[in-house]
Amino acid sequence: MMAAAPIYANVRDPERDQAIAAARASCTTEQVAAQFGITSGAVRAALRRVRKAKTYELFLERDDGTRQRLGLVVTHKGFTAACIGAYRTYGEFFRGLELPGWRITDTAGSCNTLETIRGLISREVADWTDDHAELPENV
Image 1 (cartoon, rainbow, N blue to C red):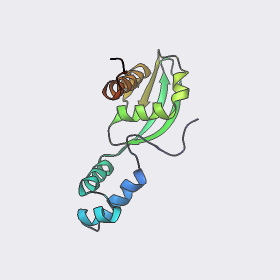
Image 2: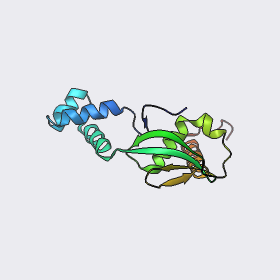
Image 3: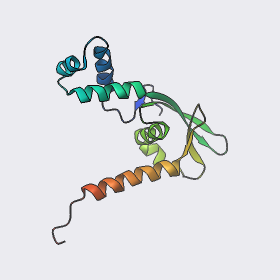
Image 4: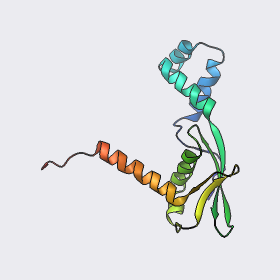
């Protein structure tokens, strides 16, 4: 079930970000932007993502001591974003778990319960739905 390759959370194209960072090491921002056909702001954003990226080794744990390695998650947005990325990647598996007692942890001792992660995801969906929902014609 667990991935051999890292999961990338909140990163659309990690290889491209790395290529931009490598190119920026020897060229100006404007030259890199022209090379990749993007704006200089996009170059700076890619560099920030590469600089802030952190790798989390995540585990699924239960109160009774049961522990399962989920894998590595790379994100520039922090531990909670890493948990959400893992939850989305293994969504079918997580949805089959009973909520009480399960949590996602990392090697540094950070912890999020599955209830918290599900709540955050459902809020994202609700926020997106509220912002982008089309009104029915009869309103």
